[in-house]
Image (cartoon, rainbow, N blue to C red; front, side):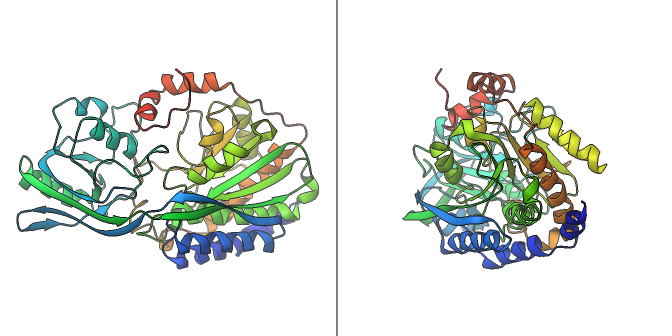
Length: 435
């Protein structure tokens, strides 16, 4: 039967939920907007037929934006604070260290205001996350951190700092546009600049949305996304799109429930953007052996082609290629490790998991993590097509004939080292393995 394909391609359920999420406004972790998004997602999953829809609450370190500034004398430049930056004032000599590669922090940066790009050069063999650059600056004794968007014509980027052990960062951190960064470097490099961040850090509550379909089996497939978004934007792509896709997949699976040999559990996390707090909360209490596979959807729809990170699990690659061939539809795959987003608290311990996103030829996030992450850049067609492919993928994974072997955590750690990711995770406090 293929009726479900036509129903999904003409469904407005996912897109309507995306509009609901973006119209909330601020969905920052621990905020009233995040709570509204969690409740709307719970209700949407229940409305499409998923059972036992509820929210599991947990405490988090909250962060509420105030004002921020970069000043040199009477000159003031536009910037935004990075979430979980500490409140405070810092001054120091401005130093632009370019890409912020690990070796760029070898110079004497003590007491200085360090500016780095949001990207890496083409010749470099891996992407360096914002938090890795931030903690290299902290380790080097910098007074403040300035994160410069590498995309011209864009806006100042956001993105959290902080670690699981110390959720609020060590030094003030702000984001600036490419143009402001260029002007700072041209006019003020080597001069004393002031960086000031005003914020509040109250205790707060977040939560994870849960619902399920299929038989009551010991094993389960997790289909996940995150509901929260940065407070400066609608969070349309990141990650309203992912959560809307999960709702659309749930609607399609409800119509195919008799085909499911394995329980499918939907988990839409809170507090992803501030350190994967929601998914760590779930991973800490879950039975990893009972999870056959994870399909985590984060930042899709903006491109027509799905990108599936398979994390070195050959059976996940096989299932992705099977679905792509079945629908004669392109699907990009990547066997490398992606130690970010809500699959990772499970994958790091060897649980098979996909990182599902949209394929992009660009480096970095583009307009993601800026005020420009808005609904007008997305298309309903892409959401519907991707929901069809992911629905089929989940059914394939849930089939009783599908076996996906877990990996030994030591093998994951070794692959992280081979892919030059271990050092960055260690400096950000994200390395979970015994040395």
